[in-house]
Image 1: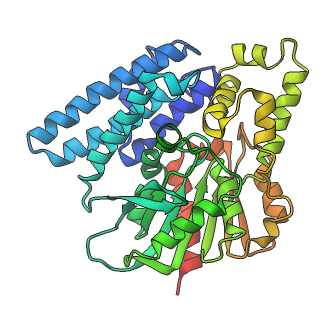
Image 2: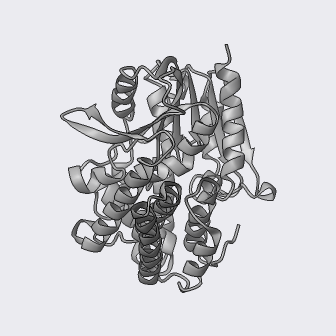
Length: 389
């Protein structure tokens, strides 16, 4: 679905930003006036214009907070956090040395932290014990009653951030009576820059500590823990659910069967292209971003190393180890993992359901960006049924 741009990557990222308006993460007018100043495929302009919008909106929030207008402050800071995330998105040529990338990431984190403190039930920032360090997370509560409730344990994927996870999942869960523990794992958010943690294929080593932590929080119902993984998280959560069996239900948003196969197909295309991957990256925003972001989050150099780095990211031979009821989501026009959800679904032997989101519903893009209300409706209606007494 084309949105504002012919460039496929710019179109998708603009739609992603705008879609969070459903939960206060954007105003459509702010998205439109920002994008109209950004030429097709101009990553420097993308970063500069989103940064300018984020700064302006953040000032609105800071001024409102100083004046005692808590709701206005919360709303503006939430939008600013999303816009700072957008500004940083394409800054992947050398993020380790990019001080502007570090500034934008930190600004997104801080704006969200300040907004989260202003929620009707303030969020609780947490650190989840993980090997010899900790992973950052947030606990979101429906209310301050202390009641034990069904709980979503949620993580993102290849490029998500802890702060974005609120808009992508937690906000919709809270409205429906679910508490939420969301976190950044290795390869995600601040963990790359601040701890040097890269993605790992055995994601049960990440989710099991998160479940252990969840079981220490009295407001999280130990018998009604739901695992949800978004984007590449559709592989990561599937892998974790194959080994972590304290999960009552799992949602793969969307399902990913074999990430290695996807990367290998890109390498094959590069081998058949005159000029190889360098030429593809020079002319294709999406390919350029995929490779650069992979170098950052997976810890490799070059496409050949990427193919090797993701060799273990497959559900082949282990999909049948998932035992909990599982919802696999699919997107008709997915530009990253087309066909993967069906393959994963076919290999699973647990109680399962597959839902295809279609183009004619406005929901056919990767992870159903632009149709977040429909995604939440179908997901949580299914969960309500699974967790019913």
